[in-house]
Length: 163
Image (cartoon, rainbow, N blue to C red; front, side, top):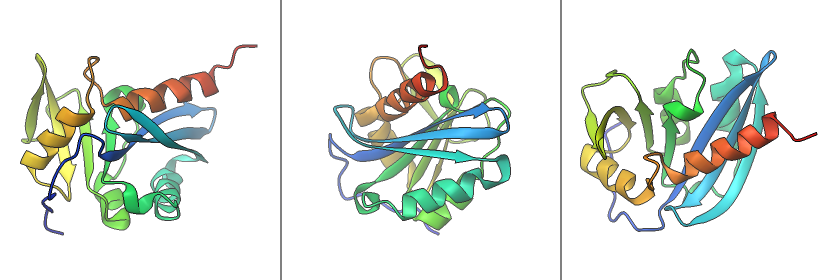
């Protein structure tokens, strides 16, 4: 599928930030739909075993009443277990929503400098100039997309409740 060009990247672009953590034999997944870096719109929660993570996430997105409003999916290395490999191309192809994944190491030739730190960026279904525009709209002072940061906070609270 050819990368699409967004007509405009609004300040309140709706993105789905995803955080994943392993607990016993299952992975807990929290997705947060955020408008830019300002407003939380929706939260999804999924539990899945390893081979089914992508399928469960795809089904949840495709069956969401918010799907038509989501302009981009974002995954960030701080919110995904180190050895977990996800098929981002499959997620993009089956949801038809552009996807950006941000990694620590140079895993792609497509680089974007985030503040003073270079990160590896993979993107699917979107071109590089629009990827940069989106990241500028959704990344706050902590150098992480706000939707991913909030999803990770919710996931950490869920995984480690105060007793």
